[in-house]
Image (tube, rainbow, N blue to C red):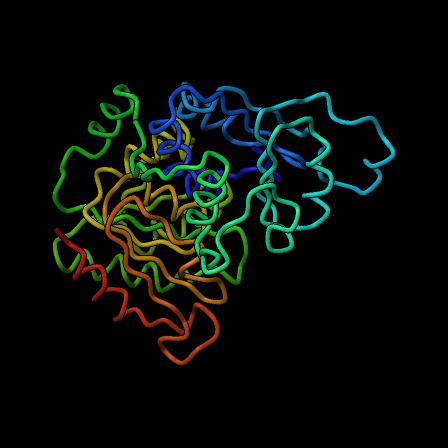
Length: 319
């Protein structure tokens, strides 16, 4: 399997497909090859990948440049090579890996040894597209597995940090780009609304969001930020601890970003807000999900989504 690289959000979005594949075909040896970047399956999610992804190769420099055509072919070999990128360059260069069967969606599967039926639509979501590639390669269908196995020690840590199980509302205001971020002031307004309903707002903040912690604590003194200790140092446990904490939420709210996929991986209901990105393409499928888009409210940016609509969506997903 050749990908450009995986960040946390990408990896968690793909995980139900990968896990479902290995559950259905346990005998396969799955090698995950990152062409340009690194994969978190060899980093922060290595523990999750263990036993499912058999090998991870980072920065393989396969599929990056047409100059590769004048270089020696990759030393890798496989029975089946799947190039996930839709770019023609990636397909041409990935096909140089020694193989018996090659699968690629580039140019409507022009380079692929096996193609979907002409009447079969190209899936919209990232998950469904990846599943289609695997099913073409293996000639059989399989079900997704919407579950992340959390280490018991991290479950216990999460239980100590958040001992109740019936009133936590998760909030993840971060995102990799400003255009994806619903305004922090609106997240704070939602947190205050949850307190009025006797709920406990729990903020999930990545290392890039440390700068907004003081603003959150000033505006919402009762807000919980369990990923950090009293000195605002990030606790050990990384992404998997965050998922363990997310599992203790009643409902969560997030942007279309990595934080949203982390909260989704906890398996509990999630409200996500979308601006210019697709609510179908990047939707997580671990638990109940409600998507609110700027278009629904006559806008083009995520800030067009009103607080009242988000509060209502959270209320409707409470179980």
